[in-house]
Length: 147
Image 1 (cartoon, rainbow, N blue to C red):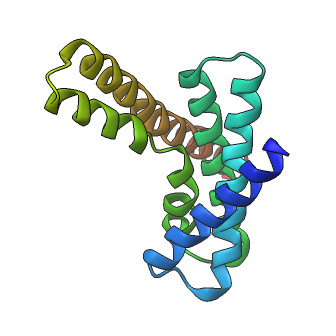
Image 2: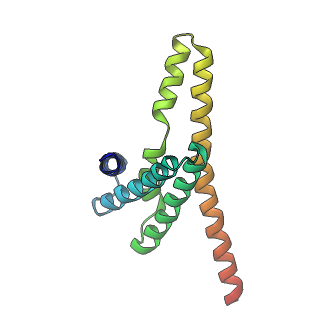
């Protein structure tokens, strides 16, 4: 039941942000699918005992790879899929708790939450960049074989 709830809510969150970001109507279900698959990768990895940071890197990498594939197949900019798909991974709740702890003068807890939010945010960026670097390396090697 927990998995089903995560599947539905992550799909709705990603597709909803697709609507907010004015993604084309025909791309909304794909945005939801990208977000759902990324969140499920994160959920399964953390359920298996893998830490939040490596699970976030893997999920962001997966989101970027799927977004690149959708971009090529459907001839649309990758940003449509990747921005909406990454939304379920963004540590908004952790950042909120950090700010709330700062306001209530609980600095130790605030620093803990802020460090966690910073690490997860960096992991998202690292996963996306890693995917792009691997894609570029594959393109370069393909070009060398042809030319």
